[in-house]
Length: 163
Image (cartoon, one colour):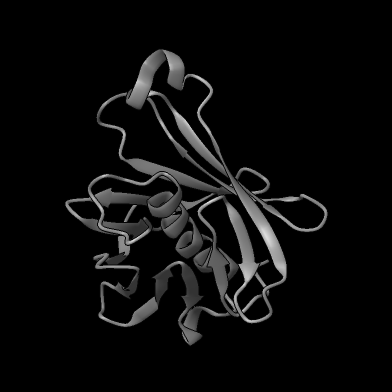
């Protein structure tokens, strides 16, 4: 999955190679306690690779009304960073929780920029890292996680154009 130049995200959690249309993986939303705690329940995304179903990464939100950050961990459980939706922006933070990229979703697609103003990648239904990050798996995972959090969890504060 991470070898693909660009990934197309489906509303049903399917992830495809945007160039060939071949299945690349799946994203599954896990919220086992939602029936009990409603919108305050912990939520997780699991992203698995096709065809073997190997775990690529997880994005997990904690408990409570103020839990806005999703910790992103690789398949071995090592924390890569975090993503959040805050005041209409998607924020991407590194391992030390320093925000290094953001995007303001407007319509079906958007551009992520680093805090220095460089392009980090594009997002929405098609996720494409900028050339500078094309060979950086942790950066690609964080970019994909930010888009999946916005699109699959349908965060109400973001105009994603996903409907």
